Amino acid sequence: MSSSVQPKRVRKSPEARRAEIVATAAAIALAEGLECITVRRVADELAVRPGLISHYFPVAEELVAEAFGTAATAELDELIPADRPEGTALPQLARFLGLTTGPRYDDMSRLWLNARHLSRFRAALRERVGHQEARWRDRLTGLIREGADTGAFRTEDPVVAAIRILVVLDGLGVHANTDRSDRPPAVVNMAVTTAERELGLPAGALTPPTAPQPDPIDPAPPGTGRTPPDPEPPRHAPS
Picture (tube, rainbow, N blue to C red):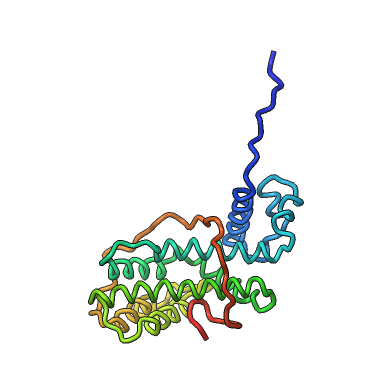
């Protein structure tokens, strides 16, 4: 005689449930775009009622903004970890450039393009885009400043150097949706050569022997705190 006892469902904490909702929305955004994030779509992915999603996000636009912030935070933490061993600024920067100039982050480049366009019309998303741009700028500036303090880099202004590098990366990322098979190596490596010039390094100093290939981005639970951005900022650099 078979048992009819159903397995007991484990109720998730509000924090865990909210993080699950945001991570699911971030995965949808990366794969299909921010426009595809709806209460019903996220509910279907999690096999729950739409009302549960609305309980945590009464305004759908807040979920869209949170999903973008989660995906962008995961990207930043992968590329430039906040906790780094001392004295590793040069290899850390080489690793960063090796990842950002490869095909792995094309999905994130598309998501940034998507978010910037939609942020013209969505205040919550505009705020989150500005916050993420500031975090990128600060994180790279901190890495460059560390290298300058130890003598690995030479620059008069780490902030300006970071902005110039990020502007080049943004320009290259604009082409994530186009065919780049005929792009000359000098263009592909423009961010590397810009960084070497800005930081007083010899040619090839920031080119790793082999490009690292880490696992795909896995959006992390949402970060905390947001700061208001300047209106219509470029991806990582201020206007």
